[in-house]
Length: 409
Image 1 (cartoon, one colour):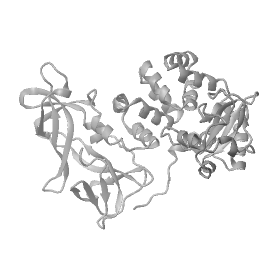
Image 2 (cartoon, one colour):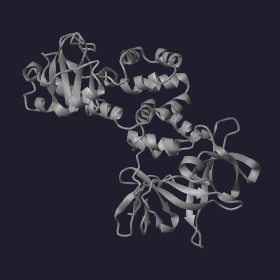
Image 3 (tube, rainbow, N blue to C red):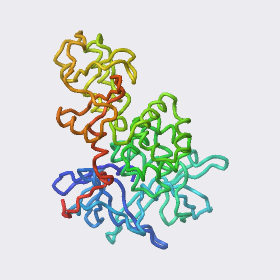
Image 4 (cartoon, rainbow, N blue to C red):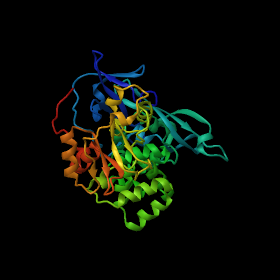
């Protein structure tokens, strides 16, 4: 399975249909689990179910299938088990010697009768005085093991995480939420803080709160440090006041300060929507300096559409706001040109207490993806982007909106 996860799924003509994300099996008494189908990710990041009877071959790093598939989003049924998400990591006991072991990979094969089954397991044994991670390993058949429990062992999500490394944040969030609760906690426990933050930013509030509740407080604070300040502020504002304060106290002081500042504004105002970390430069800065700041990989796309020029200081809340220099306009000027020569002063900055509707109207009127936000002293306090506004205006369940149309590919 480890070699097939993420591999392409093709039709007989060689056209790519999608990529394999998992294999679905059902347990049976006394015999190896039967494979019932594949979970395939098709274009649009939709995960669908492909019955195993449609698979004609599986090998050489690819899967060939025939016939049409239903593109309705996959939903797991009772009694079904996912190999990557659930089986791998389970504790079993070797029949010979009654020795505990942990499943680290599984192989599936077609029997002479044409049935696909879990044929072999790659398991790791513990050393007498050490953890599973450094134990001996061996390959066994299903008949050589006995299942220990339904749960999976701690620190056993490595292979599953390998299938998620290429996922974008929204897809990572969806993949995590599809997992059984215990398995999701294990995976989150091994993911880096920044990847957990990426996923949290793409979840609805109820899912965010449920996941955050499963994290130790120190880890939760570390994850909040990695989130965009406006997203972290939204999440903390949904928590009980005492719990939110505890997490703010555990966060890095600089990150916590940004979040505290955002919490002072109403959720449906420009101040509540904005990011407090725009790219701010002086009027004497050069075009080359502006482009270098935009070029940084950690700068979100919408935020990279412009740099903002103010009087000192250059950290929000800044000195008086002077104007913005658009990325495309900077490309038309020589690198040594000062930003003061190409400022757009016609686009009005948004007052910090402006409503979401007003922000949306200005973004549409100016045909912009980001607008500066100023306070009553004309200090730049942040930038509100079109994605911030859309997140606020769209229905709460927009991320889970599903195409109800059936059909095949």
